[in-house]
Image (cartoon, rainbow, N blue to C red; front, side):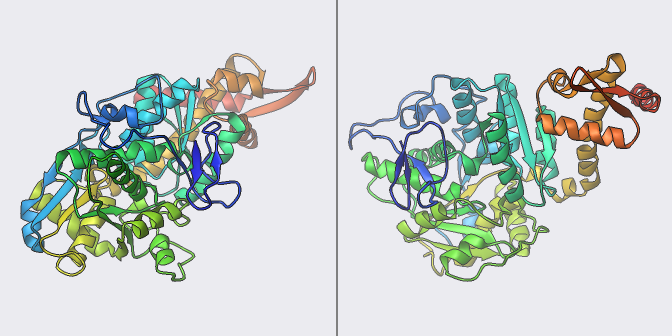
Length: 462
């Protein structure tokens, strides 16, 4: 079942929903775990090793996710005066981020439920992961991205043939649009903040940490919407319930100084109404985190803490981890290490065991890639131009109406989006419309044919 973490209200698992209808709290999946001492992991290493502790699925889509290394960071630990420091290196997943675990599970679940299209609001990693796994399974991935997104992650989405749509200034806007789209189209909701099964998939990170090392005293996780830190906390908590460990870690949540709504809420401070979109840590740039209650629950229950770090501290940590440990972490991950630098020897004793979660690769978000920002904008423009070119091509062969155009385009966007393209083409004098048998037909103009010919000429030169 699904249960509200705030008021305890219970709901059937289908249809999937993320928010309690009574109090607005976050819903989490609840299952009857085996009794203590009756559970033992077996089988090959990897994400699906933990299938029996996940919601049931018949299909198991995989690209080899999970079983990521727990890197003992001896040189980095020495610089901070720590005895034991480990980096859970999720960059070793197929698309180089921890979101591959969720993508594998959600894609498998979508197939079980008979869906052909997934919709996902994303600020990067989730979209890249879902695009890859949807491609593996032969499904369509419709990714809604904010204006500012890491170029490397956008490149992955394009390479995996996702349908990409720009939506709003920040991922918060894209999340709202994804909720509307899923309701309108009936597509599978794969947005991390709107699907409670994401937490279930990501809790397997904790299972691996304990199998690889045992239970650490501290675990540090960067926070965007708040679901990731809770995922790990839930995993650790379940292991104790299963009798596989006797202790629990203290959880530390980290946000950037320019955008820290969860930290502010936890400290009962007034959060800024705006976030600094120029931060390097775009993966955790979330102004209105829908799962802040989950993050706060993890921190409070574990007797942990939350703090912020500056962009300068993030950059310094990113370079230090790469230089000393050979791990190239994205800025959001480096924020966890930057936080540890502040806490080591103070709130965290020097003889403590600490794990920092490295969520994704710096290759997705390096400044070298950010320098290609113009190409990112061109990619977004190219998507719109490509769709209009396809419409002109169809109309050049035969006049038709909007619904038929939508079907010929492969139903990979909403009908409203098709009509928006038609209206823009009409405004430019490239198509005209007329009524026939109660339907609104569209016809390409002579000007439109010339533009289409120009498109073809450009393609010959490329």
